[in-house]
Image 1 (cartoon, rainbow, N blue to C red):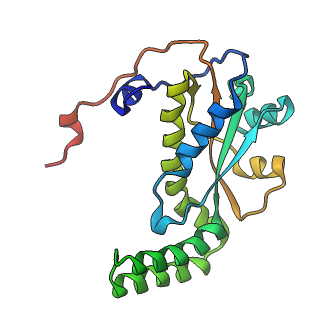
Image 2 (cartoon, rainbow, N blue to C red; image 1 turned 180 degrees about the vertical axis):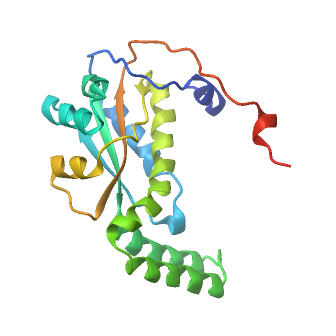
Length: 202
């Protein structure tokens, strides 16, 4: 098994996959890593659609502006934010934080008010606010997949209404990312990165 450092260094965006399927138990281990991700107030708003069939994978590739490599992966995960689940989970999460004295009463009141204010927004506006929580879970997926020799690729460029239409979802479900998963059929070189000196602000 890779160390976290090794996984971070070895991760690549894979766009060519072997057709070979991979074990279901490996996929469940990967999703379990996502389940354990942190989220605001422990709301855990992530939801995952597992797509294996050819037709919906092709529709997803078309919704991603014809990034057809998506449809060639054995599995595509559509990683979503459950908007109402986030709002409900935030309130109960604040209460739990209060019970373990992780936050003061005044902070709890602020967080509950913030959740109440968000409920007044259209769901389409709440989705992007919740997406950051889902992004953390997706990165857990990307790194854990390496333990099983699997490649992944973050896909964020896609038509959200088209994805909703494929699965019959309403505005409560906000698709955040597609993640094709499979055994890599390529070995890309690492892409250039900024130096630490470029990133650290004075």
